[in-house]
Length: 77
Image (cartoon, rainbow, N blue to C red):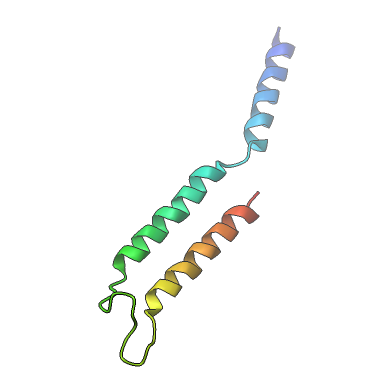
């Protein structure tokens, strides 16, 4: 009986250690962070840029952060 209990505990603990992290939750976390970043970007010109035609740099910064977060999530597998 103790041998079977030992094997059962060993099997369960091995399954716990080999079980990958929840990738969907990590991807949702990246999307939530991106939404928070975009919410902090103030686009006073309505997307038309400033007088020189330069676009808002905050949006590209948020995109880079989202891409790096998703890449880190995928590489963790």
